[in-house]
Image 1 (cartoon, one colour):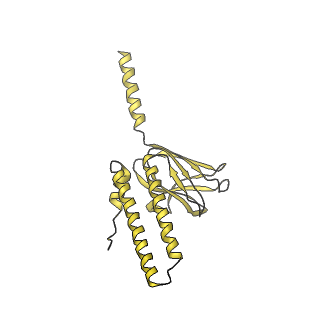
Image 2 (cartoon, one colour):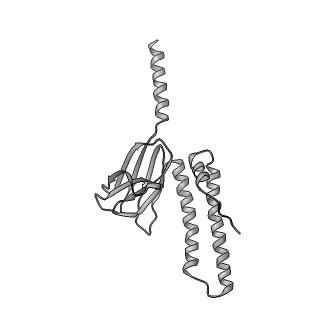
Image 3 (spheres, one colour):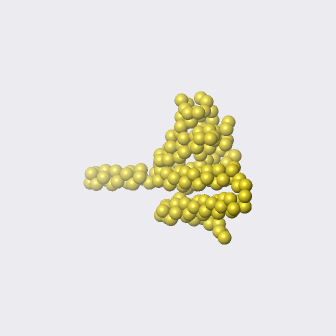
Length: 187
């Protein structure tokens, strides 16, 4: 009888451990000073940090519980433009904060890996648009070509977002994109 109870308790413990809402963020902040403050905030409340820690030996760490899949932002308090956007979700998340022009990165969980992949794709296409805008055309034909290229790049950005939503339709990232992204009306 005691053996059955022991197996039962072990099974319940295992199920509870697998359904944990705990997260751990291991951060890298090599370019920042010892003792700099790293903040976490919900993206829609970016100025209201819900957690803070400090940089020690180029690293930082957060642990906690999350009961909702929410877009968050990790940023350096002394340099708020140095940030990484990520999703709070159970698991181990790695965030690498880098000052501009370098790009901060996030990884570790399925949704955050997909989010980083989407961000990388959008940034690559945005670089092409920025290049065209920094080098304006000098004649009408070239202006039309540039406008067509920018429109094409914008469509590719939209397709990247929609494909990410489709690939992730079975998880919170897909639902987040479906709820928050409105495809532009292209002419």
